[in-house]
Image (cartoon, rainbow, N blue to C red; front, side, top):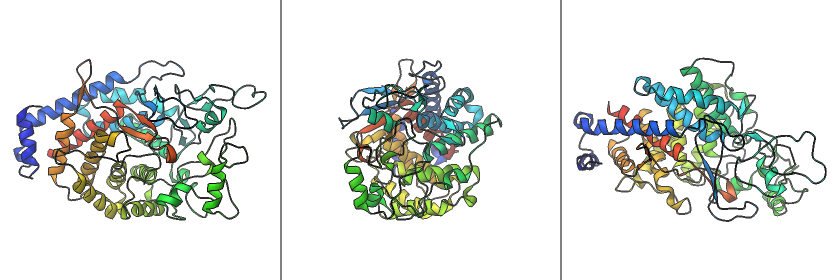
Length: 466
C-alpha cells in the first residue's frame, strides 16, 4: 500500500479527519481492492460437478483436524462441500449487490450459480450442513438395507469407523436453516420469486429451550441459562430423562460408544449429537438476523428467550464460549451486530457492551486477537469479524468512532494476498468447528469465505464514507 495511505490512516487513528478530507486516491484504492477480490470470488466459484468431490456453484472450503483426536483420524486438509460456506458467501454478496448493484455487475451471475446448489441442502423449510451422499462404508453389522439409504457426511474427509460415520449423519439445524432461508429471501429480492418459499418462525419455534427433560453438559458447565426459551441448535428430537441431572449426562457420555447410551448414533437415522440438544448464542443471533429480515420477529415465540440468552453471555463476558461451534471470540460480536442491524432492537444493550469490548481490545495496528488455542489466535478472521461488527453497529445507530474502523481497514489492506491471476484474497480463518470437545480441534476454513467477509466490510466502509 502506498505510504501516503498509511499516513492518512495514522491521522485517522486520532480521529483527525472525516469524509471531507479522505483522499480520492484512498477511495480509489479501496474500490480497486473490492473489485479485485470480487473477481477472485468469481474465479474460485466451482463451475463443474464431480459427484462426491465438488459441486457447481459452491466455493472451496476445507475440513481439517488441528491435532489428532480419538475416532476422528487424519490431520490432513480435505476439501468439503457444505451449506454454511456457500450460503454465507452468497448472502454477503447478495447484500452487497442490493446496496450497489451498478458497481457490482459480476455478482448477480455468481448468485444465480450458487442458489441452486444451496437448495440441495434443503428438506422442507429446513437446511442441513452436509449433503445426502452414499455411505463411505457399511454402517451396521449384518445385511445392509436394500437399497442403501443416502446419509449426511463430509464429501472427501474419510471417516473410518461405523460409529463416526453414523454420528456424521446429523439432523437439520437452526443455523443452516437460517442462512439457507436467508439465501432464498435475498434471491427473491434480487432475481424474483420462485416456487421455493421461505421458512417462517414455527420452524424454529418447534425446538426451543422450554420445559425440556434434558440439558447439554456444555450449557450446564459453561454458558447456561436454565429453561432459557432460546432456540435450540438441532431441529430434531432429543433423548428424555424422567428427571434430568448433570450426573446423568456425565454417566451417559462415559459410555458413549455403546448402544445403550443416549449418545450412540443409529445407522441410517438422523443423529442429534450426544442425543442432547444445545443452546448456542451465535446460532441464536443468526436465527434472529434471519427472522428480523423476513419480518417475523414479532410472531416468533423464541425471540425473547434468544435475546435473554445472548444478553447473559455478553453480561458475564462468556464471549469465547458463547458459541459451541464457533471458537473465535469475535464471531459473537459479528453475529449480534447482524441481528441488531436487521431490526432486533432488544439487543441494544448487548451491542453497546460488545462495541465497548471491541474498542478496548483492538491493538494499535488495528488487529484483533482471539484466544491462543484458536488457529494461532486467528488474527485475520478476528479482525474481519470485528470490522464488520463495528460497521454494522455504526449503521444501526450506535456511536462508533471512525478511528478504530480505519485502523482495522488499514490492517486488512496490509495483509491481503495476491492470487496467481493477480486478484486479491485473504487467507481463510476458522469459520466453524466440530463443537464442544472438538471446537478447538476440528476446523473448517475457506479463503473464499474470509475474502467475502473482508470485501463485504470494505464495501460497508466505503458506504460509510459517502
